[in-house]
Amino acid sequence: MNAILKKLSGGNRTSLGRTNQVVAQILSSPSQFPSLIDGLLSGDAVIRMRAADAIEKITVTRPDVLAPYKAKILKLAARETQIEVRWHFALLLPRFSLSARERALAIDILFDYLGDRSSIVKTHAIEGLARLALKHPKLKSQILPVLAELTEIGTAAMRARGRKLLPLLNRPSPTA
View 1 (cartoon, helix red, strand yellow):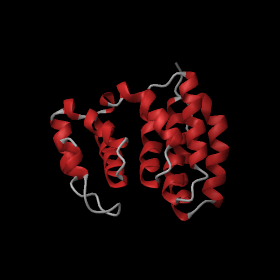
View 2 (cartoon, one colour; view 1 turned 120 degrees about the vertical axis):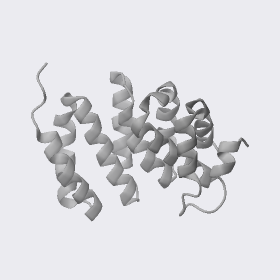
View 3 (cartoon, rainbow, N blue to C red; view 1 turned 60 degrees about the horizontal axis):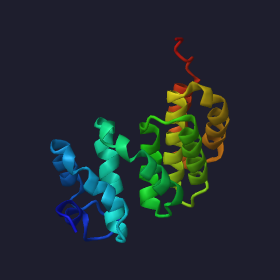
View 4 (cartoon, rainbow, N blue to C red; view 1 turned 180 degrees about the vertical axis):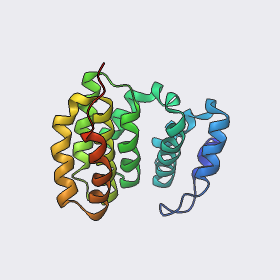
């Protein structure tokens, strides 16, 4: 196991361990980022969760480091069952530059996540769908009705997130 993954190991899925330390390390040395991708493939659920968390945090400011792993992340996101990893994937998918086919796959994945038993996964799936629609305004007609419905009938977290996202999606699209 490499040094990055060792730092992510130990404890349980209710703690972040040294994830924030790993984030800072990789932000200062992005060449180590592939270690986190390896972590997503770990047999250890704690390492997978923390690797996904670190990737999500890093790519808020450095989405470029994620780009080479688009196909792998899409494939992993489609088959992932671990709740703590799914909620991070839901936020990662809109950060990619997606072809029409890849975008359709990402939307399918996020709609699948809306059926998850975890309220956090569902809430992040709403966020992911809204972020895709913001990047691709033609998706608004497909996503707005779902978002509006979940803002009315979803869990408290889903309703709160929906109330923040609906005004963003209801803004007129900038003209080209």
